[in-house]
Image (tube, rainbow, N blue to C red; front, top):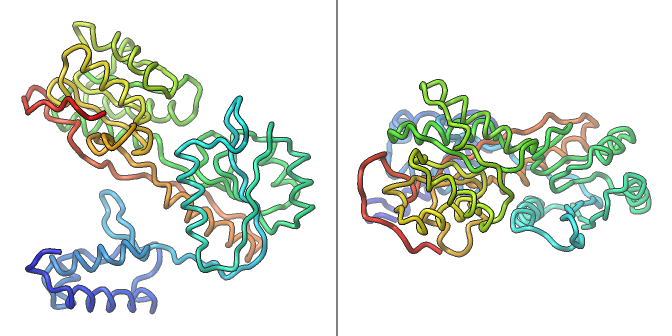
Length: 367
């Protein structure tokens, strides 16, 4: 904390705002007043106010909304008890106990959201996703509701809905029915293109996932659409579909970046793809960000500490888990199916992007 900011003042301001939030002065889902007006009303300097707002953000009472400001978070109501099912995803050709780093982050955030409550969870995974087996499990244990960490099997969701069993999908990445917490992949694509365009890049490329995968198709649509609005059209040879693997991404990026008309900026729809592109650039003698700007998505899959180098959209695992628990509790208490929660993370700008054509000191060791 800066020496010019009194910790006692920050604590006092945070306590005042916390009391106001609990008293309903600032309602859940509404924006806090602008900093200038709020600091004047409280009679404190803006840097003191910012530290107090950061404290409340860390407590989960506030959250920062890109391009909007500080939003009063919905208070998590866990005043419900009983046993719930947390259904884990299964990887193809792997045992149900084999989880990706992304899945582990989602499970952790979901369980953390229930801390201090009387909710208890039974963790399980269904090999093959058999709807009949799921129904048998729910009836045997008398679960009050079900949380599914991602879900690609529409039959599972349909049987839960038909039986009237409260459920919510945490981080639904497919074009399947809710209720679910979702990431706004289309807007992420737009914001990635907007960031590149603002830096003066006009030759844009994208390393996406396999065609037909909803989240990657949405990112690509948003990216191309925003670029087109500025008269920039992504060339077909600069759109490459590749699996989530650094070696496959390296090979694909190597071919793209070796061409004379290579992109100067590349949006990679997973950080592991960005890592592959980074390796390809280094192999070709291209410097990041001098010769190639990179943007990723997830802030999870770049190997090692080097991920702190990458400009990326962090996957909002904490919000995805927390909102899913809120939705499930609401359904159990009211009997009403909740609406989807759509979340768009803010771009975290680090060292992997720079203005087009402006040389900076090269960064070459971020493995």
